[in-house]
Image (cartoon, rainbow, N blue to C red; front, side, top):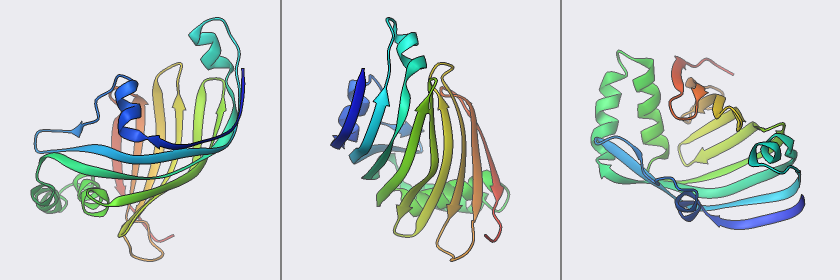
Length: 187
C-alpha cells in the first residue's frame, strides 16, 4: 500500500472515540477532554504485509502535522488545580511543571505543528511545537508501535523569552510511562 497527499480537518475527539479510547485524561481533581482539528500534509507512506504486525513493521515514510486543539476541563477545577500545584511547586519540580502546563495550556486553543517520520514501526516527531497564548512546548518523541513504548522529551517555555522553564522526560510503556521533570535553564 502507498499513500501520498494530505488529510485535513481530522476531528480529534471523534478519532479518539473511533480508536476505542476515552477522551478524558486526568484524575478526579482535574480531568480534561480534547477537541479540535488536526491535518496531516505532505504524506508519503508505504507499507506491506499480511498481518497487522507485518504491516506496522513495514511502514515507512514521513509527513507534517498541524492543527488547533483545546483541552477543556470535564471534571474538577482548573483554578484550584493551578493553585494547589503552584503551592506544591515549592517542594516538587514535577508539580511546578504540572502547574505551568495547567496555566499555559488548559482551556486555551493550542496550535500544533511539526514533522514526523515512520520506519520499522517507530514514529518519530522531531521539533514538534505546541504553542498556546502564554506557553510553548517543544517536543521530540519516539513512539515504538510494536513495543507500545514512548521516549519523549518536552521543553516547556512559559513565556520568558530565551529560557526553557522545565524539561519533562516521558519514557516507558504507553499505558504507564515514567515522568521526570527537571528545572530549565537559559537557551
